[in-house]
Image (cartoon, rainbow, N blue to C red; front, top):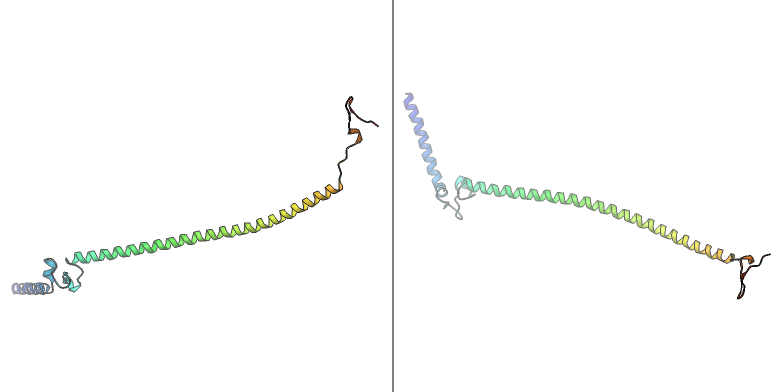
Length: 157
């Protein structure tokens, strides 16, 4: 009796397999297998009508690889953009610091130049005043009287 039961199970499995093969062929599975002349734009719709490619899993793998490559490209672009923005913000901050220091230096330079101008004017006024109240005097003993025959004669008192 166990002999009949195993033949029945085998027969049921074989019948189910044949029915599945027939339904797969009717659904475009054979078109995919023989070069993709199934439904719509020369691509077969095996594997549940998804239509990812001519050779089933290969087409799906290619589509997934293309999608993964596009995601990787976009992720890299986003990372690059973020890195560029960080670098831009850093250099922009440094440029602002330099501008602030240059502005501070310009104010300091203007203050110093104004003070130097004032001091220069005061020195000129002092030189004028000193020049007006002093005279160059030479003592009489240091004056030589030149005569053509005798040379220099000094007067002694």
